[in-house]
Image (tube, rainbow, N blue to C red; front, side, top):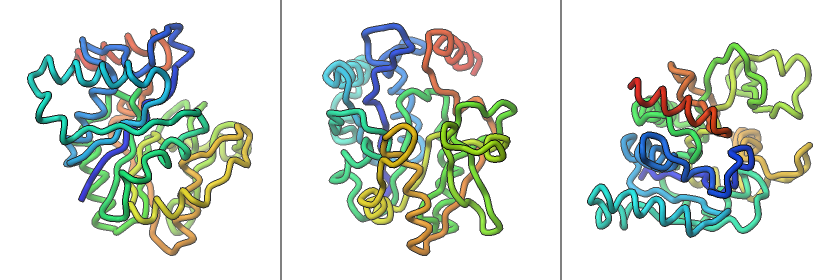
Length: 252
């Protein structure tokens, strides 16, 4: 079984808007819609959207979009919601969907503010994940300017860990391969790892990437799969980036 979690609980203060970030539109549809559709195109049967800031507005935006497309009934069985009442990091957000995750199959974790990722890219990463029986596969990208992104740190066995910008040494900051914020996990491994992560870091948050070292210690393989088109990891944090995403989407 393959399912997806979409992180959509944040406010998005840099958007300079009272609207939740993920409901800002790209070509007439909310950003989060594209993440849902990418997950479905990649073969996910069920999608859980993690909501927080103005949760009802996010849910209404998604439901209204599918209603306009005449897909209300179809999507009732596909999309569900989990509430993150406090913004305590990506690890905490995913933990809010523990019941949805369960212990069977695999789960793809996506961001509601990365509308450019495609089902094809996710499908390629999922195939690698399944073929190598990884506990977790991180979707990565090579960037000429990696500032701000978590770095993929490798060792002789493959993926060693992911280090956030604020916690990285100078040597680690020089690494060009970055974490896209998208992952594929074995459900049972993810649930076990989420119960062990802590908030002992510069941000005081529960980081989802911290599950990687834990899953590695379980004896499961972990790796990163680099996507061919680095544009697809572009997140939208400002109105300028929203316009850029719309331009890329239009050119497709």
